Each structure stands twice: as structure tokens, then as C-alpha cells.
Amino acid sequence: MTTQRWPSAWLMTDERMGDRLWPALDRAGDLGAGVIVRHHATEPQGRMLITRKVADLCHRCGLILGVARDPILARALGAAFVHNPEGSSLGLPFSRSVHDEAEARAAARDGAALVFVSPVYCTRSHPGAPALGEKEAARLARLAAVPAFALGGIDERAMRKLPKLGFAGWAGIDAWLAMAEQP
Image (tube, rainbow, N blue to C red; front, side, top):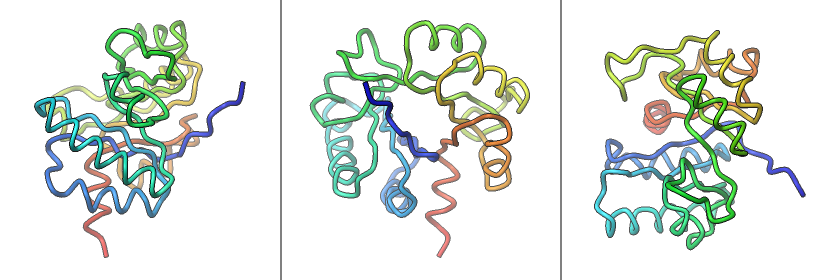
């Protein structure tokens, strides 16, 4: 069995991105990032259209694609894995979100291929929610015992710290939007 080599950066999509998704995807392509299509609140037909368009772009650019929750859609679109699958992952590798010790241990026990530990820092996505902080996030990453990616409030300064904390990389939304706005 070969071990998947994961990119060190991940673009997590969602509805808040609106049309800014496409420049962020261009930037992700420039950097060889992975992409996880989430768009949970989008109605099914619209989600299918967005996910198909993102999948086509990922395949053209050689980017690793993950699809959140829906293993049937993930398989149909040639995704490398399903993120937080609802029910079975249908034999696809899967990733998990990790917010606490129980989730970290469950990811390890259930055989997750990778995890996203969040929120490491305060984030606009979850205003008022407490951040884990670097020490606790690193502890959860170790408990998961698979490649762990930091998510939540990640900026350039944080990106430089993450390898020292034991993270394989980072994931975000706002960081990609900010990078896409840079010349």
C-alpha cells in the first residue's frame, strides 16, 4: 500500500467566498495546494455544479481534491478522499476535523488518513469561539497520529511556526482570499 503525499496547504471552500472562490483557486493552483469543497449550505444541485467545476479545475491543474461529507459525490468526481464523511467513506481515504481530544482519538481509531485541527487561532469563521492555541492544537495533532493540518486564523506568521509545532501544513479560507487579492 502506498502512502499518499499530501500538499502542505489546503484551500477549504465555503459559501462565504462567493465569486472570490475562483481567484483563490487560481492562487491555490499556483502553489500546488489541495482543495476541499465544503459548500454545506448550498442546495444539492448548486453544490453539485460548484463541486464539479472545482473538480475539473483540480484535475486540470494536478491538485488533490477532497469533497466534504458526500462519499458518492467524492467518488463520482475522482476526489482523492472524503472529508468528514457522513456514514461510510465507500472505501475512499477520509479526513476528519479535530476540535478536541475525543475527535483526535476517534480519527486515529477510525483510520483517518489526515486531520484538520481547528481552530488553532481565533478566526473570523467562528466569531467568539475560543481558539485551541498552539500547544493544545499540537497535542491534538499528535494524538491523531496522522498528518495534521492547522486550520483557523492562519496567516503568514502562523504558517512559518507550524512545522515546529509538528503540523504537516495548514488550511484556510481567509488566508487564500487575502493571497488572491495580492498582485
